[in-house]
Figure 1 (tube, helix red, strand yellow):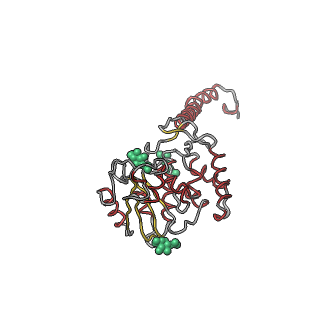
Figure 2: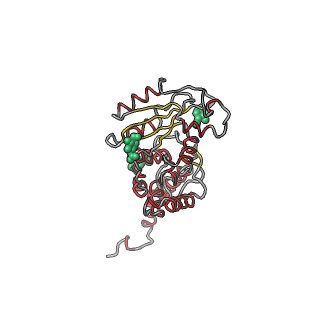
Figure 3: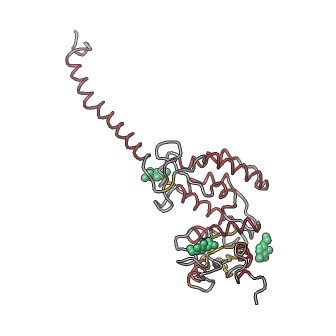
Amino acid sequence: MATHSNSRCSPRAWVIGIIVTICVIIPIISLIAAYTANQRKEDTHIWKGQGTTQNLQDIVLGRCYNYVTMNPGIGKKNCDAIWQALTGAVYKKNPCNITQEDYKPLADLALQTIPCNKTLLWSKTNSLVHRYTKASQDLLTLEDTFLGSMFDSLMWCGMSYSSEMNYDSCPAWNECDNNAISAFWKMASATFAKASCGVVNVMLNGSADGGVARKESILRTVEVPSMNVNAVSEVRLWIIDDLEGPDKNSCDTESAVELKDYIEQHKLPFSCIDNYRPVQLLQCIETPDLPACKLCKS
Ligand SMILES: *[C@@H]1O[C@H](CO)[C@@H](O)[C@H](O)[C@H]1NC(C)=O
Ligand SMILES: *[C@@H]1O[C@H](CO)[C@@H](O)[C@H](O)[C@H]1NC(C)=O
Ligand SMILES: *[C@@H]1O[C@H](CO)[C@@H](O)[C@H](O)[C@H]1NC(C)=O
């Protein structure tokens, strides 16, 4: 006994086909289209910061090989794996949703022993502190370490749905809490502070407005809390005024005393030096005739 369903082109099959098309296939296709359009829209979102640094991969690999060559004591490091770990931290992720944990594999590959008494932290003295470590060679800032030197002054971020960097724009430092750049530097700062031992020096700005270190500074929120109280024997502040002033902050002014209390709350011994002379001599290179630069002060 033949039935209608056996005949492919029966009117009923056509009707069912049209209903299936209208009720199932078209909605699915438009959902997929809307979804990919939404993905594309999210990935072309314009952030407030600069985009990824041009030639990022070449720069990172070059800096990596250079550091390993100039500092053979650091041992074997796999620069390609380091690049892969960077991409692993940010590809296919919203650049405002990156955690310090995402950079853990990168930190592990860049592991470095920091000798005791060598750490120099800083806040609001960016250019002077790096001139100082280049001139004196006996202390290290984060940017002189392997991890910090590879990524210093570079910008990068990925995109939510694709495996590539975003060269058009990236979240600015304060645009969102967990952005690709701030998460990296918080992780790198925490790693450096954790690895520090002996005397930890901190170069601060005695001429800056708003005190020596803001409440939300990396120094207060990340570095001091990360220090190992059994390894750090002292946190020594150097408060450096611009040679021609103003002298807004010193060891005995409010913001430094407040920072002292904060450091001591973390069970770390504290000391403080105003206008540490070796740094002052470096400042004097450009203006040797100023009174503060006289070798014999009467
Ligand atoms: C943020 O990242 C986490 C883990 O990678 C993920 O589970 C979560 O869905 C993400 N949130 C957003 C808003 O992208
Ligand atoms: C670190 O400095 C302290 C105090 O100046 C000193 O006692 C100690 O021996 C130094 N440690 C190293 C490893 O140089
Ligand atoms: C200290 O802060 C002042 C005021 O912001 C700035 O002009 C100066 O360059 C800073 N000094 C150093 C050493 O960075």
